[in-house]
Length: 156
Image 1: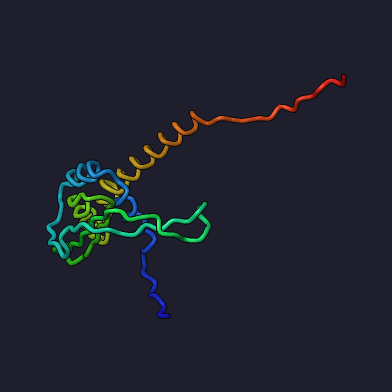
Image 2: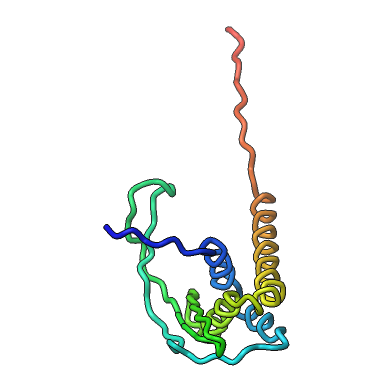
């Protein structure tokens, strides 16, 4: 088995790719349009739609099983400056995948990263945190606490 090379910055890249993939398409487009100086890029892989097999685990820890398939759109772009980006998103939104790839490439540029981090990644992360918080509040509001009361019978 070949040893994979350690890629510098891989955890950070994984984080922003996850944020881009989980973001709502409208939010991604709005954040993208909010960047004043968007660099030119060319498609290495035009957005294409395909299927992936989703695996699951019973209780999150059991043996893996094939849960089903889901639609995924992927794209790859290269900036004029040479950085390459990829984008994978659930569903069929080609523009979302293309913008995710462009943002990924921009995040790899030392010059563009600070701008994109604040204008796109941080904004999308905040929106996701707000949705997660709202869902948790709704779930907490429906929580039922059960208790058991011991019955005692009087003799007789």
